[in-house]
Image (tube, rainbow, N blue to C red; front, side):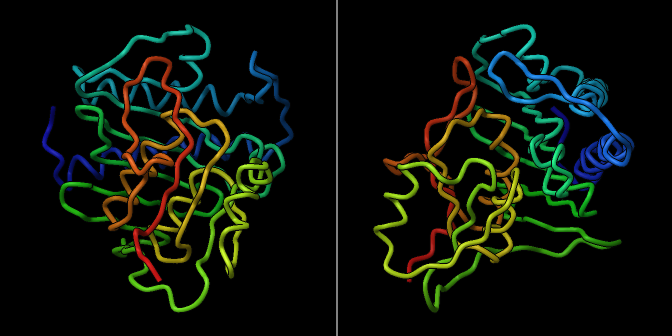
Length: 259
């Protein structure tokens, strides 16, 4: 595998941005969508973005396999990977894409030995890009020409700010979890942008008690951990990657800060 230096990082960031241009060409025009077997929506943008990202990553890192959402659902490939591989969600937040609220992202995560080590999240409609290198403890956001370093909020002065899913945030388990918190504020957001809210200090906790797949969380976990946060299951164990079927348990992403 090539070294995770700035040149390598910039190449992956550029891949995400170019995929964003592909997605926005469809977003800015009338489009249709279909339903997959699990009833989730899929658009032409999902498919074209994935094709571009997968081919680009395979050229950049010829020996590292790419696991992406749409090709996985078509091939039903449940093989287990143990070393190094890419996890790609070519359009995270397809429901947000369809509703045209701008809260969708392109997620690219690099996994090594079951752990995310590098992640890129690009929000093309918001013209924002985030990336994180876990080992270096470096997370950055770009909303213009330069990147600004991100860190989680170090201290919670009043009630915590929760980042909640716009499309999946009203289940019984979540209500029960929130009922145990005396005072809190919330912000609803689609896609992996919730990880970015916590990583940038705008939120403190992102609880998720509805189904997710590994490509939904890999990039976000890398960015959050690089910013000083953590992502664990409900028992406090860090999420692992390369599981058979690539399904995640329920999890809590947080700054790791206590009031």
